[in-house]
Image (cartoon, rainbow, N blue to C red):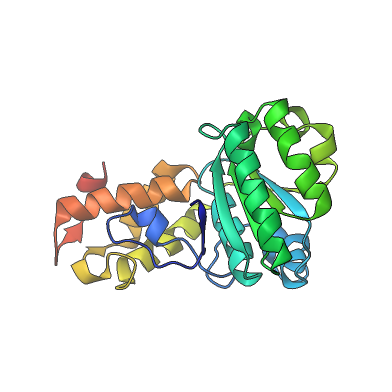
Length: 234
């Protein structure tokens, strides 16, 4: 069953990037042009506007995270589709489940990662359910939606452009991961100078997921009660 709550606690065996995923807008770092007070996406979330959304931006900038935050804020069931793995049959089954759930007052958010990989027939399968309000569609893409999303679906969504994170923003996230004892690496008591975290941020080119992955590997090399050095990062 693909339906799950977005606030399930992360498994300690999952990658650091997934464990440290922000759970609220207050924890979210970056995209101030959309999320600062009074900005369009923040207003849409705060007003519980049920409109469908496409997030367009490079990897590791918060597209999936924002979808999960919206599901948590609106207390909606969250269904995550991979456009690479899902076919028409799976889409139709989930749409039928969402329609039944709506009759009982449960809202469903369908999140489609790499929505640009869905062909026209697959995108068409979502369209009537978006129109009826059975689902709230949130798509994520690294490609220009104007060229990859069918016009009928695009006209029923708002497109928000996300930017790569700045180096200092990634340093904030990495420092948080080192200190967080519940979800991060805090129990390892690993230390790192700001210059080392800045090096990781520079390598990641604005991709927080990539930066978390480097930090996790470097912490494993350093071991508990040790310091992550520049040599380890390299």
